Image (cartoon, rainbow, N blue to C red; front, side, top):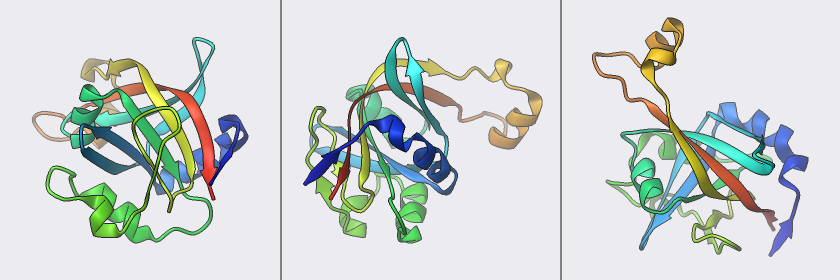
Length: 170
């Protein structure tokens, strides 16, 4: 069962949860993948409710987003097994099935094709309406050095997802 909510009523909760990690779930064809994110924001852009997620170009999630421009944001409500966030933040969906490995429960979506996750019940269903590659020459040196070390940086694309449904899985 789902309790439909206004995403902005939970904006503070989402922003407080982000530094500790929330999940971003993507799907294309029969493949569903989720990954831990710690960067993102919720707001209004072009008169639409938006969640912006930042995904490195090397990530499997980026590949799935390029195929199917939809994603869910899955936020814990209360305590969560930190193993979930750790595993989803260190393992690639190219090499494993995180849902099977962790026993995560898929929740059928309302509007898009990507499921929610029962164990992280606050769910935002998002449809990508814009994407922006982060250009290295626009970053202050301090951020470049901290987040993109090495000879070739693994930069992020910002995915602007229109929030088309928001609910708490009960």
